[in-house]
View 1: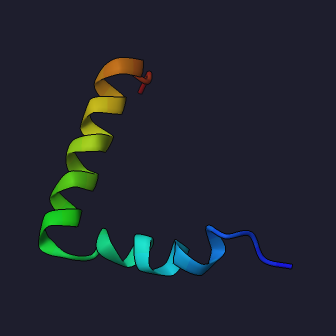
View 2: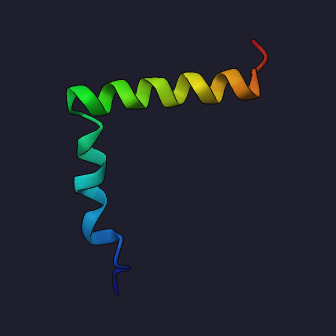
Length: 40
């Protein structure tokens, strides 16, 4: 049995492949890394 979100996961993930989604993903990653400041 699939969860409700399973029906939309592929569509949701594919949005991050669009120009806008790609930029949002990039900004989200930058923000997260700025917050956690991982060591090198």
